[in-house]
Amino acid sequence: MKKLLLLALLPFSAVAADLMVCNGEFALCAASASVPTGKTIRVDGKEFQEGMAVCPVLTGKAIANGKLMNGSCKAPAGKVWSLFSTVKEYPQAPTWAVVSMTPRSFVTSTEPGGGMSNQWSFICTKQKKVNGVQLANCLGPINESPWDNGHVAPGTTAFTAAPVGAANPVGGDIVLKGK
Image (cartoon, rainbow, N blue to C red; front, top):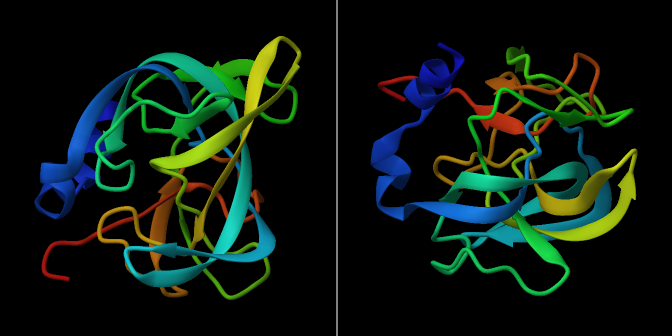
């Protein structure tokens, strides 16, 4: 049911032509927080505050936005792409123990850490293992919509699997028909 909910939220008209399936290593940031780096990042000609999320590296099939990845699932040596997966259990901070995904919605705000981060189809650098889990530092935009690469305004309803209180949780805005 959770898979259907997440897929129902995807506005396929916006990105359907760019969706692709990758098979191999990828970072899954769905339950991660994101901290501002102090830099900016450009996406589709728009500038956003850059955020960094620490994410577990998994292996298997995952969904990617080929437009942002130049149509290739291949990452440079020592790096992986941050992709979307329908796995229900995976390592999560702070202990990196394998736990069940718990999706939730939240409303973005102007408070520090009150935004959302989009890490989908952005590059990550592999780091050390923690408790046997390969981790990666992923860089992506804060308050950028994964559906249309536009700015996400404060007061927008978004979804994530990050715990309540996570700063700028990785996720996406909920797109309502007619908007």
